[in-house]
Amino acid sequence: MKALVLLSGGIDSATALAMAVKEYGNENVYALSITYGQKHSKEIEASCKIASYYKVKTTYLDLTKIFENSNCSLLKKNNLDIPLGTYESQILNSDSKTISTYVPFRNGLFLSSAASIALSLECDYIYYGAHSDDSKFDAYPDCSIEFNKAICDAIYLGSGKKLKVVAPFIGKHKSDIVKIGTELHVPYELTWSCYNGHEKACGKCGTCIDRKKAFEINGLKDPIEYEE
Amino acid sequence: MKALVLLSGGIDSATALAMAVKEYGNENVYALSITYGQKHSKEIEASCKIASYYKVKTTYLDLTKIFENSNCSLLKKNNLDIPLGTYESQILNSDSKTISTYVPFRNGLFLSSAASIALSLECDYIYYGAHSDDSKFDAYPDCSIEFNKAICDAIYLGSGKKLKVVAPFIGKHKSDIVKIGTELHVPYELTWSCYNGHEKACGKCGTCIDRKKAFEINGLKDPIEYEE
Image (cartoon, rainbow over all chains, first blue to last red):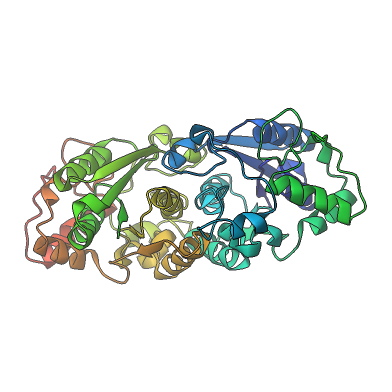
């Protein structure tokens, strides 16, 4: 059995990679790391380090052009400030149901790209790190349980029943992921989550807040450095 | 209301485009044309001509890298012969459940790319031309009714319920498409279906056979030229 893991460089996907490597062995696991026009290259650098740590072959893909008309605040071309505060406060202060850091249908696009590549590499599984904290308040609808079920079906059926999507953290919290990953000795010091691309993580954007909380709940110290 | 139409340059997608233009007006319709490493550029040239005929803005996307490991016979890099004969005969003569012209999860990938772009352009609908003749004998599992339902759900849910997929020919035959398209005066002389990239269509590959039959059933002459 072989697996392809969507690797963004954050703690969720790094933990998903660790699970796949434990299950199938690193020689049977591939990583897929996708650039989409982000403000910074910290995520890609982190995924490169993590893939190297686990000694898995990695495909790098650039899908920036697909988002050339998107007004998402994560995109470099838009030169917008990343909103601070929790996802909840951002949703409450927004006219839209989604938030400015929602990259249009990103998980659907990335999973579909992974499906085309995984079939070519004769993989049986695609792993990705979606979890319930990201779909709270409908912040990221492409992280929800309902979306996950539909895209799993689409990939299974559209691949001629050859490919299954594994989302080990669906329904779980980020703190559960840190717990699992700590038991697996995931090198969290190599990961990057912050939406800003400064030297150290900002500690104030939605994903920094969630990340810090996930370590705190487990009584652990996040091994990366923050600006304050 | 605005729509994005997946335009491959063949008769199915040209007819889907005609339907969207009739429904929303050409100023509210966008086309998306995707290169994926095909043997020839005839399809892209055809989609360019059709988009120009209908005066719709078109996005061109190159996803060739995603298929760099695929052994699909449609890909230029593989330098394989396109199998001749009907899809049925190809399936019967193959060890695999899918056929050599199956591009791994192509429709899923193209629809997901369309979803990301359509959301950026504030479209309400994505149109694509899948029909039942392509999913007969499981030749192309990503054209089936079951796949269509799942990917429609995934795109609707993953977009925060903003985007719907319209597959007007699901459950219909290619001959039904030609009937609808003829009533809409679709310029079929501008379309290209053949898997080979010769000056004229070969008339012998699976898609040529299906195309010719679709016109014959309607008692119509296919306006393009064939090698024999």
